[in-house]
Length: 164
Image (cartoon, rainbow, N blue to C red):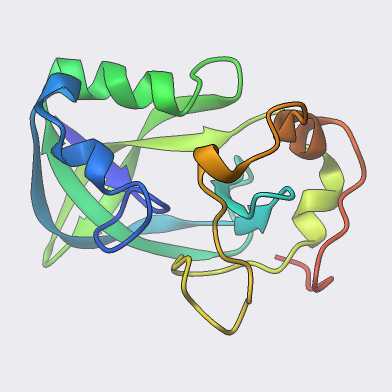
């Protein structure tokens, strides 16, 4: 089965190592790919986490990577993405080369509406200097602060109010 990866799990990103750990399951890179539908891909919270908002038709066709995974890896990704509490997972049409395939995608659901005013990205990179919002890994975070509340309930303070 296929999974579309759009954020910190992509190659050369901070959490890519997670896909390489055998205890998480089998994961094989297929190719670069993009969504057929447009979605808002934003960077949010004090930890600069990329989120794909469940708001089809807004934003961009998202560039990412397609992976072939087993059930164990899909389960591991569900745990990492906090399905169903934080994110939802559903099949989406993904363009890979000249083909369209169905792949699992992870979306932030029940988000604060201010997030739709955040700057949208077509392609995420933590090191991209144009957004100057490097991802903050788990080990560098304040464990007393729940970043989930920032994207779910409270008004966001964003760098740029550019509608998706």
